[in-house]
Length: 244
View (spheres, helix red, strand yellow):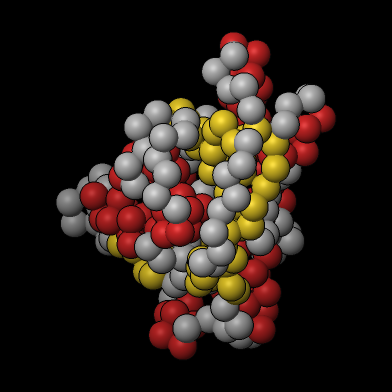
């Protein structure tokens, strides 16, 4: 929490809705001031999901959970989620058996591999995915000899420019921090900053990256600093902002 009398630390929130509001509330609880700037809009597809031969569902984002829940009522499958937030989304949609990995595709693949080896899964894993993905979960599992397939159930549509009010704020003073949750978002933000003629403002901002891969995608801009979360989860990202 910030010290009494100290100016509030402002944090640019680049996640799409509804995750932007969730992160903003978590920032407020820590005494930080969110500035909403979703860089993508999630569009779910209404295509029915083919569940033939499926023994378990895998989700690498809460968006995937919501997209599946919108088109299919089956909740009897075990769910393997990439991290705690995605697992919470699955539980809120009515799934009873939910297992969470440590926040990235590699640990999710390891969790699923262990489930196969233990006999907890005896059929195919279906990955409910977006059109753009960080990591190849199905590739990991297939390479290990486990049946898995993917269905694309949503897409995240990139913004074409920064909101005018946000661009004005960045030009005038710049938020203290920018939160970036994926390599794609990092590349998009730097592109939009360039297009707005605000590249120089990076030197006044710190970037909070969810992982090393996200930090690597920041294209070596002249940031005031780039900090990487200790683990790829939102709470760890907020920890970085609070303690740096």
